[in-house]
Amino acid sequence: MVSPKQPNVIVFLTDQQRHDTTGVHGCTLGLTPNFDRVAQEGTHIAKSFTCQPVCAPARACLQTGKYATQTGVWRNGYEPAAELPTLANYYNDAGYHTGYIGKWHLASTDHHGAVPRHLQGGYQSWLGANLLEFVSDAYDTRLWDQDGEEHQLPGYRVDALTDAAIRHIHERSKTNQPFFLFVSHLEPHHQNSRDDYPAPRGYEAEQATSKIPPDLRAGDSTAVQHWPGYCGMVKRLDESFGRMLDALESLGITDDTIVLFSSDHGNHFKTRNAEYKRSCHDASIRVPTAITGPGFEGGGRLKKLVSLVDLPPTLLAASGIDIPDTMEGRSILPLLQNNRAEWPEEVFVQISESQTGRAVRTERWKYSVRCPDVDDEGNPISQPTAETYIDDCLYDLKADPWELTNLVGYTSHADVVRVMRERLVRRMVAIGEPEPKFVDAPPTAPYEHIVSPEEAYA
Image (cartoon, rainbow, N blue to C red; front, top):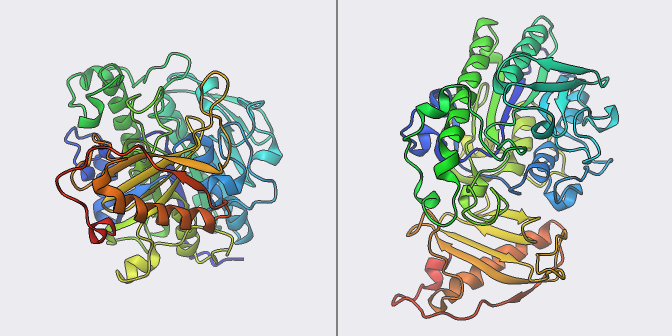
């Protein structure tokens, strides 16, 4: 059993939220004052990236600290390997009460609403839906408890989930047992049945003239149609986040509670493929992340590149729970205590469904590859791994932060491709993937400036 002094832990997860919707990332729309305050007063993981830009795989990674292909959930619709421990299992073993509220998306597609008890990830308390986007709407929130009984909650969906979380926190605060609560929102994900972004009443109109980020102004972007509603959803999420923080304050447990805010992936509004994510671009993979509470107050702005798989070991370490050797991620706590702590120079990303792809991102460079195999209709074959990959994208993020100029195939950047491939292969092999073959992109006229090997390692 743990000491009652061990911290409570709350994860506040949004769905499909871009990092640049927040003030600390330069957004001038004033959508996220509560997130911004936590980032400034606690620890801001300023360069935070998902390791799989689609819902179920990312959530499996967050629950296990392993990469998607290692969990068995390398695409939507699959379930994690039964033998894999989740965050709930680790916290249960440490004497915590564990609770889950909201979207799950880690049961098979046979289960849209109620999730069978054996697929609830080991959480003791449960109020969720597997595919929340298919069984609810903005003002029609339906969740199921651990016994499969349906509950219809009043209010806008963000508020309904947050109200449930506040009730849960209130009840747990009456005990001496520490609690781990995972609150999983659907917003600002689109409403699948209509392919729109239903903000609370009046919030979309309020954002009608909001400035659209540069990467969303070209191509077949749906941002002109969807950005105002999306921003309205983000604003209401932040207001709910603030209400939850207020509840902690009113209950006198703020100083005893770690709170993590993050998202499973971002949103490129159909600028990179035919839907909203599933690409290597920062619009898909970079997410807002901040942590507050014991061990994280005054942590400042962390500049290292941090992956979603690093968040589970971070929470366990901050809770005084040993990090299992089976986790691929690592705790950020040493970085907060010693900026010279050893840390990878790149984050590794697996991509599925739109393609079988892999990517690595450093501070300056982004390199991605994709499997060339297609089916009889010319669509990419969806598979967990591939024997051969072709060059897909190369971006110089220093010169082109919005990733508008793909440099793949430029002979001037041959050394960059060589170095980034080495990084990619090392990360793939380290998690059990076979070492692949590569096909070079067709050579393209070079820039006047030949990028040096030294620059390739930047």
